[in-house]
Image (cartoon, rainbow, N blue to C red):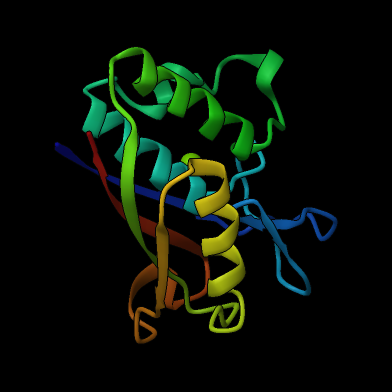
Length: 154
Ligand code: MG
């Protein structure tokens, strides 16, 4: 068994047409996040936790943001590639636990669907929690959102 941790943060986009994707779920009525991919901050934290647990580098090595061919890529596709990468190293996920840090939008009603989406994609239990920054710092000022993840592999 090995453990890995992941962290990611993205700022909100000024583009009103950009969807907010969290764990592969489109969250209606909320501003999207800026990024080279679909900017799914939750899935990115999970990917880095898995890669870290498998000793397989990080998301930036697997998907460089200088690679124009992956512009706008769905993070769930990136997750599939990360799962394949740790499988090639002899590991499979046991479980993952995520904390989303966001002042807005309120995620209480979305946690279950995000967890279900990621559990299905990972083939292992993923739990999702959400908290705010109590209005402190850039996340507290609603400039963006972040996610933390720990993952166990065997
Ligand atoms: Mg990211």
